[in-house]
Amino acid sequence: MIEAIKQIGPRNMSKVSSMTNIPVETVRYKLKRQLPKMGFSIHAQPSYGKLGLSVYWATLRFARQDTQLSARVLNYLGEKGYLVYYSRELPNGRYSANFALPSGTLNECTSNLDYLVKNKILSDYQLDEVTHVQYHSLNPRYFNFRSKRWEVDWSNVKAEEPSQSRIKATQIVSFDKYDLLLLKEFQADALQHTTDIARRSKAATPVLGYHYRTHLQKYGLVDTYMVRWMPEAAKKKVGQTATTVRIRIADVKQKELQQVHNGFIRLPFSWTEHFTNRNMFIATLVVPVDEMINIFDYLNGELPQLVDKIDTSFVKSQDVAQFTVPYDMFERNWNVSYGGLGPELKKLTQG
Image 1: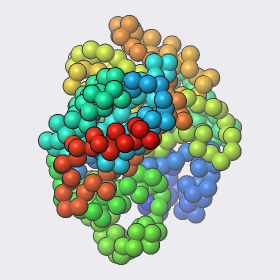
Image 2 (image 1 turned 90 degrees about the horizontal axis):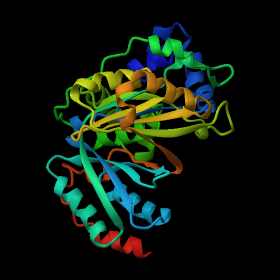
Image 3 (image 1 turned 120 degrees about the horizontal axis):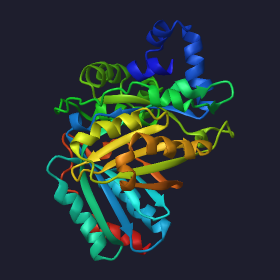
Image 4 (image 1 turned 135 degrees about the vertical axis):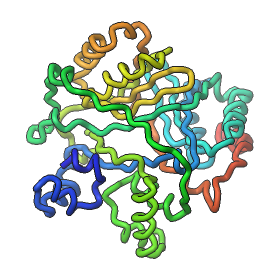
């Protein structure tokens, strides 16, 4: 069932049923009840390129180790500055952040970050364009749904034929506020029905249905649907505990990129791969704690010539925020004059 959802998404339960030979009521029960209790969730990932947004990876170092101040600044950028994700990494204490910027507005973003450096809120930052990104779902072959635990046969992992890295068309397509409303809602929970979204947003259900069919589906505004495992999200303790791991590999040559991708796509716990214009490969994984040594033993064998370049950090779950597509920054077009946030940011740091 998870493999079917990865292909077509979770909303057409009848089609999932026909692809899997599982009764539709069973599909509905498992999606709505059983999987969430195990720590699974399903999210839509927008195709930022088709929305006219370019993804950037930022590494931020705050001048003070004050996580409340850092959160105030970053949450405001998530509201007004096209920040879509941030996390604090240990043991170095740096923050990683993703921006999804309207085309041609890099200077507006850097002006806000420069302001934070000038006012000694940030000690420094680096902002790199992401030239390739890939989002992954879990590999259900290695999860025991009875015991609610990962049972990984690492010899099978190494023998798997890796899927090819997908290069998707990113030409900007026609979209409007209704499409962004649906995207932000499905990012939070892809199982929602358009009727419920319409009721909360006071939009007409037929209008949202039309936009879902013609724009999100036909135009491909959803890049992929991700089935993710995060046991902390379950209402009670389930199975194994997990931690989020960030792995950077510096100076990856183009001829090495496919090998690196092959190594990470096989991992059952991979969430994302980013590759930047500075040839930095960045992978984010959610790993069961008792599989941690096996992960690094596997990478040591798969990427022997790159192990000296690998930098590993751990993400503190309390210092993470994921923002939806910047819905409030769009009317008929994206707001491209967001570079003067300095005074408001200063107020936040003095609060």
